[in-house]
Length: 120
Image 1 (tube, rainbow, N blue to C red):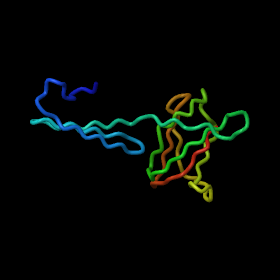
Image 2 (cartoon, one colour):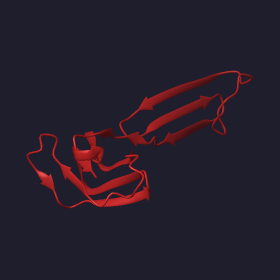
Image 3 (cartoon, rainbow, N blue to C red):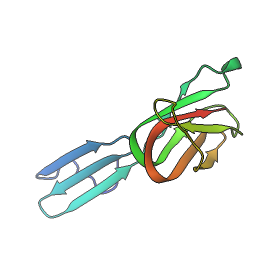
């Protein structure tokens, strides 16, 4: 339970949940207060078609500047991350990869973009 969320003993509460591609926004309103919680879930990438199963494919279908966190679950910090447009017609060169741990990373760009990341 998130701190500040109303309990069953509260008289009245309106709860709105908005699911976005990279975060979930929960807004709770009671008679006297309003609280907004932003939850950023980990997005799990799907195994790709690389040899030996060492390539993970992540698809970002909504344009954003930060992709992830992406759970690749490879058990190591991948040395190669390639980013392409959704149709693979363009390869992006300007992005930053932040390794959050041996199984999770985040990709950041200066402009919002959709696309596919190949992680291996």
